[in-house]
Length: 320
Length: 234
Image 1: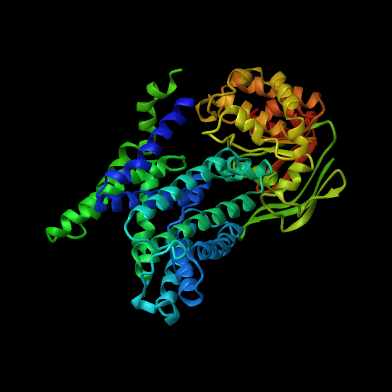
Image 2: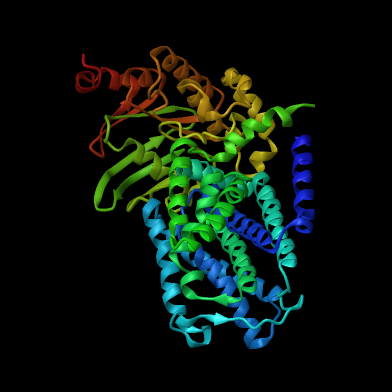
């Protein structure tokens, strides 16, 4: 166990000094790695631990992004505060969705459809509200300052996104070892048995979706202030819904480091191949590669890459 | 101790139980026998609050529990060991047992209770850190029953504990059920293994197509020609 912490500490130390030797382009790739690891982890809280599959988590990304940007542009509220307003709003909407899903016992595919419907409906609504930029989206003005959550160059974003990812790991680790986390796993493994033992499954399902939505929406605020442009189709759209869940699935669902491992593998691949194929006029081919990798992992490593990684690392980590 | 009075239970439009009335007396083993689809599991699920009866009432120690949520029913002293074990496969045996002690008064005495569980199932002590999913069928049944005991129930409901076990193990499990009963826990047993379950129980009910077709003391039922013919093939 001690060795695990030492290894993690070493990795973190390397990641902390990395910006000194990386180009701006490479920094961008790392930021996306951390960002998607963070989103994947947030999604993992609900789907990985309680087993309720959400295919509409872009909803919370969008809510986080739009809420913080709207509050900043309209009322001059710092995104550092607006981000939490977005989190609360996302939690409330998640709780409403959860209420419908869990109270009426929607399972499997039906729960999935509910989550997609919520994301799509919100996308359409936002596309028609002028105050939110309707279907042309919102451009952010560039006013770099800490208060505005906007910075020159990529280095501050690098550290913020790394911080987000590390925080999410800490939160999920605490959750994993808590009573609530144990009950969430029990729900995933056998919801009815958990109920028969007296677990208030409704309460813990609602808890999971609220935490997951809150965390996801903070990521949305970060992303908005990193790319300076919001569009309903990219913030609430189906492609983000899918992007978001691929990494934890490939890395290892319901595990602490699965989303991180998945993101460290898939994100660079996606970014590099996207850039590479865009030059050759074959935009979109990177998605094909993505699809193939996901299929291969699901076929040959159904529990995710993390299981194999743990096996390889075992000899190093288990020694005294 | 447990009084089920005239309940009707539905799955959507389909009626699964019709006018079911049943008594479990304190300190006894009561068996409900019946073939597949006769409504046995439905009855337990209705008592433990997972399903709601449309009409009728359920009382436990003279307290109305028909509308009590399942967590309240467990807290009140009824534990439900579901059919097919339904363990949490990636959790260890210890974690599975701990899941059985949900409420603070159960957690306080959890260590002591666990020792009592080990007196019934010494095998579990050796398997504590093993993942429940990797155990054999008989061991899994022991974990499921042990988990059900962790809430220190006054009434334990067992749904087909002999399902999928070898004849020798079935005898062992029934022997342990008797011991648990002798230590002071009343038992409501649901079984298809008619002969063995009636042999250890005091009272029996026969459920056919969602209604109680026969009832009586276990000896009476074992002597009933209809039951002998239909369920024992004699």
